Length: 167
Length: 437
Image (cartoon, rainbow over all chains, first blue to last red; front, side, top):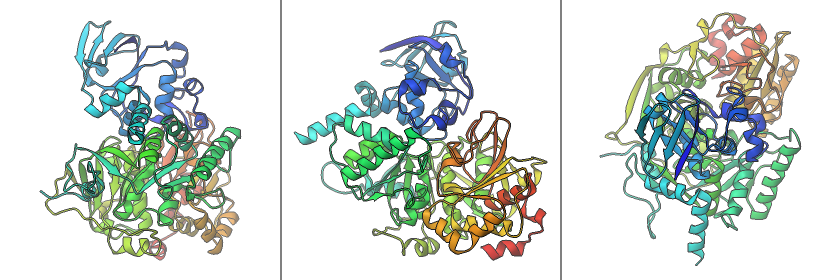
C-alpha cells in the first residue's frame, strides 16, 4: 500500500502533551481530537493538512504520556503514516494498534522539510522524497507488527483470535 | 549466561504454547507473550479500552480480579464529558464484576493506590494504560505502560506481547546528602542521560544510596523511568521492600534478583554523595540543574503531590517546611496527596491543619494539577514549581506557561519564598531533614 502526500516536519522529542494536550482527553472522537492536534507547537497544522499527508519527525517521536488519543488525533487529520528517526515505545505500539504505521527512517526524516512531496510504500518500506529526488529504505517492521498493520489494527487481530478460540 | 531481574520475571510469565508455564530464559530483543498479574486503567484510558474490547467481540474479561480501574484523572468530574467517561468505566466495572474498581472518595492516583492496596507484589508482571505504570517496579515487579487498545486486548486475553528490553544498570554509590531524596536522584539521572537515554530499556536501580531509600523514594525513582524513555524501572526487593509489602500483599510474592553474570546494555555509576537537590527547568525533564544554580525564578504556583511525590512522607516533608510559615502572597500552593488513605493520614497527623494555616490548598487525590486538567491549570506566562514528573510545553495549561520539577521540600520552600529556593534558605538544617527520614 502506497501513501503519497505532503510532509509536515517536526524536530526531536515531540511529546504527546504537544500532540494532544491533556485538557482535550475527555473526548475520544478522532475528528474532535484532530482539531487540537499539535496545537501548542503548530496551531496552523489543522488548517494546512490534507488527507493523505505524512507527518515526519526526528528522534523519540511521541514521548511522554501513553495517551492513545495522540495517534488517534494524527489519524483524525487524515494523516496516514508517521516517518521518524525513532519513536517512543508506547506511541509506537499505539500507532500500530490503531492502524497508523510508524515508519522508522532516520535519513528520510532528516532530509525532509514541510511541504515536500513524499511517498511511502508500506509493503516494501521504500520511501521517496519526490521534491528532493531522493530514495530511502525504512527499517522493516517485525513480523508481528506487520501482521497487525496488515489487519488494520489490533482490534481485528484479537477479534480473529477470540473467534478461533470459540470455534 | 545469567539473566537480569526483568528478564527473569518475563521468562516466568512467558506463555508457552500449549500448556506449560514460563520459559527457561528470555533474551533482550525477543518477543514474548506474557501472562499478566494486573491490568490498570483510568478514566482517560479505560473508556477507549472498553469500546475496543466490545469491537474485539469480547464479552467477559479474562479475570475480574486482575483488573484495576481508577477514576484518577478528571474526577471528581471536571465537566460533563469527564462524568460520562467515569460513568462508562463504572458501568463496565459493574457489568464485568471487576473487584478493584475504586470510586471517588475511596480512590487515589493509581500508581500509589495499587501498591498501597497490595495489588502489585514482587515478581509480578503488570501492564497499565498509563505511562507511569513503570512505578510498580519499585516493589521488584516488571511493570510497563501501554495504550488503551493494548489494555482492551489484555482484558480479553489475559496476556500481551512484549519485546524483552535490554537492561541498563544505574549504580548509585555512597550516602545521600541531607535534603536529597529519590526525586533528586532520578532527576539527576535523567539529566545525565537525557529523555531518550534509556529508550526501550529496563532501568535497574541499585547501589548503596538506593538500598538506603525508603519505599516512597523508590516509587518516585521508578515512576520517572518513563521520562528517560525507558520501558520500565525496577529495584530488586530487599528487607525494606518486604517490610512494606508483606502487611499489604493480597497475593503471594516471588523474589527475583539479577544474576551476577547477567548482561547489561549499559552500566552507569553515580556518586550519590555529590548529588544536590535538583530542578528540571522548562520544558523537558532532562533540562536539569542543581537548585543552587537555578538563579532567581519567581513563581506563581507550586504543586506538591501526584503519583511521583504524593506519599505521606512527601506530605510530612512539605508540612515540616510550611509549619509556622505562610505561602508567599503572590503564590498559590496546591497540595494533593496520592490516595484517600494518605489524605486521611494528613488529617490525623495534623498536616492538613498546617497546610490550611499556611494558606495552601489541600485537595482530594487527583491527577488534575499534574496534567493541566483541573485543580490548578496555568495561565499564559505563569510559572509553577511542581513535584510532578513532566514539564513539556503546555503540560500544566497555557503553552506559554512554564513548569519546574523538584522535590517536595524544595517546592514547599519555594512556595514560601515566592521564588525557587531551598529549606536551608528558611533556616532549616540537616537535623530537620533527618527528623523526617
